[in-house]
Image 1 (spheres, helix red, strand yellow):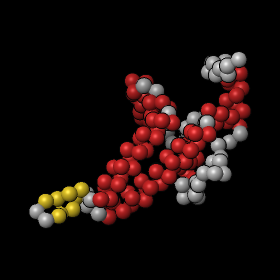
Image 2 (cartoon, rainbow, N blue to C red; image 1 turned 90 degrees about the horizontal axis):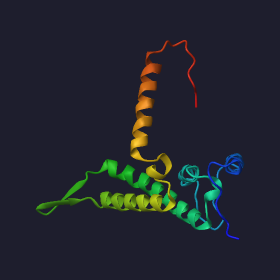
Image 3 (cartoon, rainbow, N blue to C red; image 1 turned 120 degrees about the vertical axis):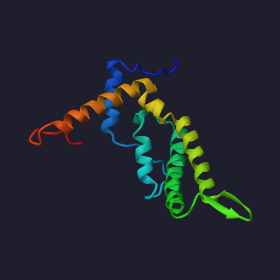
Image 4 (tube, rainbow, N blue to C red; image 1 turned 30 degrees about the horizontal axis):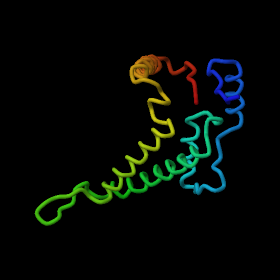
Length: 155
């Protein structure tokens, strides 16, 4: 028999989701190097999908994506201190740091697509996100106009 995936609207899928959520975040396998500096990126990436949907190959790509995001932060701090263009002879060229950032960003986008952790995969179609954004904006306006004595949710 083939191992078919459960329907997402079934009772067994709901039970599996509860079990997966209760088990906490997916830990990196021992053969992957995920340093303490990279760990926050790892945690955010693996939290994006159901814990039981991660394959061994996905975990390798997730570690690469986490390290890529860490590098983006590291090089962004350097880029903030430098200008985007540097003068060379009679012309200007893009700073090498900015070229590295462009390359790292392209890698992050490709890895996110491969892992299905990009915005469309996690948030749905843009028309649906637009509706959610409008609801959020309306709710924010209502809460901003509400009396300070009214209880507000904390997350």
